[in-house]
Image 1: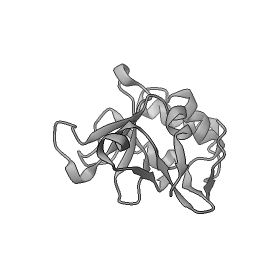
Image 2: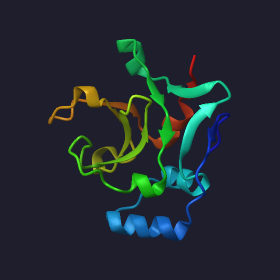
Image 3: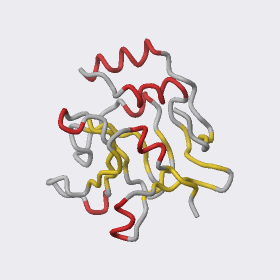
Image 4: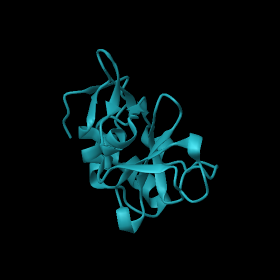
Length: 148
């Protein structure tokens, strides 16, 4: 997966054997493109020379808001399910924004691999605090643009 942007302080690539063991503990395989990302850099801070990235997607056009990516989490952090109910059960946390909101990857069969933003300021039990950002991790990663 190539992109003109790079990650500041990328993590050490995770060995495939470690990802295999983590997937076994989860009970399912990760989407291949997200697995490739972890094998290549295993998380890091999202930035170019000027600062953090923003994600441009239709949500921004509708609300005038944006979603920023502050940090992509390592496999070790991603694959630990949070103990709170603020992340839907079918999702893995893969990144966060500067405000502490979460970017998650769906592992549900109906939208496997889709990326969502969890706006924790508007949390409710119905999951209406999530906004779909992309259908795949590759689409999500390619949507990163430098913050203006």
